[in-house]
Length: 44
Image 1 (cartoon, one colour):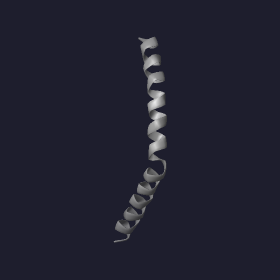
Image 2 (cartoon, rainbow, N blue to C red; image 1 turned 60 degrees about the vertical axis):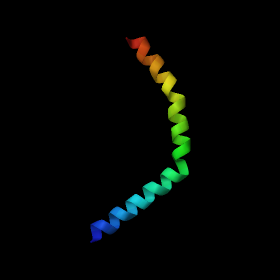
Image 3 (cartoon, rainbow, N blue to C red; image 1 turned 90 degrees about the horizontal axis):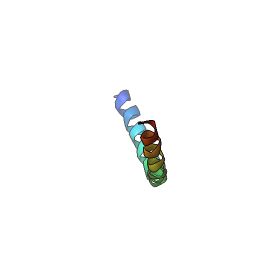
Image 4 (cartoon, rainbow, N blue to C red; image 1 turned 90 degrees about the vertical axis):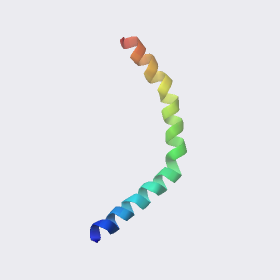
């Protein structure tokens, strides 16, 4: 029972963080994507 309560609290926290920061994180990942592809192409 206690584990279920703690799990639910964790899920609630993750949902709040995704709601709050999700768009910003996705935007940053999209900005980094071209840089990563360029670096991978340079290594090949």
